Image (tube, rainbow over the protein chains, first blue to last red):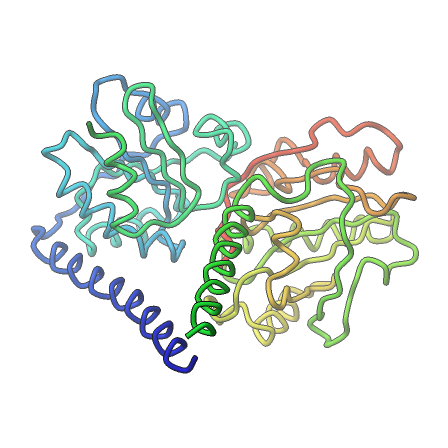
Length: 177
Length: 206
């Protein structure tokens, strides 16, 4: 019985360690990216953003809604960056949609993008009428972030959850064939 | 050996149930408009336990899941206080519940809730969802997340779920005051026009 319990504990800590290792790998990827320069931020209202959610060009789009103030979003950003980098050749494009407040674009968002050297396509969404646009992203979305849409032409999936790199790849792989 | 097998079986069952509950809690669950809300008993910032049953005079409640650390929740703090000032006397007091795991967000701990309430002069109870059992019942997914309930013979019935209004950035540019409209309709015995809205918020930290 004792042995069994110990086994269980070992199993759990093994799982935990996996995640840590994962993190390290991603940090290495990040370091390789060239230094960011001054940057022009694209700011859209929802009408302007909507076409990015409905392209029909056989490409797989991974659209992640995030913000610098959202801790779980920031935590998973490296995975989206890694995906964008690794899956480029597989016709996959990551689009990061920031929901940061406009008054913090200069003070928080831009410095964050530069510091983290984010390479994925970046758009800031400034549209206060969320009750109108949230259901247009997905009718199941409660509005909590992080949230992610993966789509290819008319096939699409929506996730109101945090990802690790493995899960993200698994979901994107469902769109590859 | 038999014991081990039994244990393994038990673990499998526990894990099965656990993963199942996790999925269940995700999105579809929780109270919808028309559902009767179970009462809760949670610790307030003054150390006293608060439940809906403690409000004899209330006609209903404006229940808001909120916290110290989410910028959207913070953006609405003054408006939540204004709602309590406006509606507590009329029978619809605000009850704020902090749903985040304090382990995940130490700045949402009781001490910080007390400080925040003092700083902002909250006149409503600010309760800790200790053990995080209440927010999943409601189906709250984020802060802020509001439920307006009406006290009826059946119990407290959900009348509105969603955002306070349609502009978190600027209170002066609000066009639709969803919660006010809902409570006013209830007070006047009229039907509520908009019973459900969506808004961006911070996911509840587990």
